[in-house]
Amino acid sequence: LGICLMIQILTGLFLAMHYTSDTTTAFSSVTHICRDVNYGWLIRYMHANGASMFFICLFLHVGRGMYYGSYTFTETWNIGILLLFAVMATAFMGYVLPWGQMSFWGA
Image 1 (cartoon, rainbow, N blue to C red):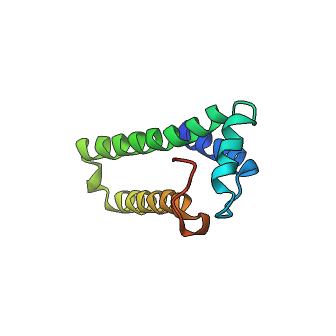
Image 2 (image 1 turned 30 degrees about the horizontal axis):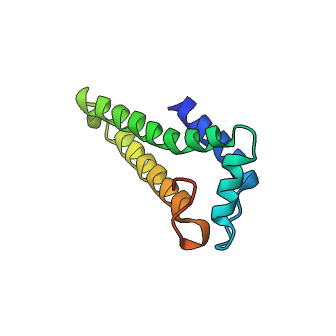
Image 3 (image 1 turned 45 degrees about the vertical axis):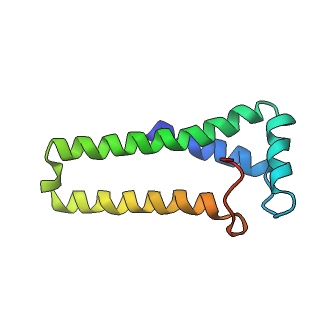
């Protein structure tokens, strides 16, 4: 989970350096990232697919906890659920944040 999160943060920062969230130039900035930035296409795909991989790892981690009965540790389990909701809210805000439109990064 830590490696997935670090990849997400680093690729997100690199994408944010070239992305403009203005409604008239957002799509052209994404094409600029894919065509003109060195390995921009790779950074974009790593960011898009890394989010899916992060959530797969996160759900496997929760599933492992359920399998081994970690829900009996109520305080730890509740903190984990709060962290899961916080991660889901952060991912949602990162996807719809630019001007209330769906982000072109995943388009």
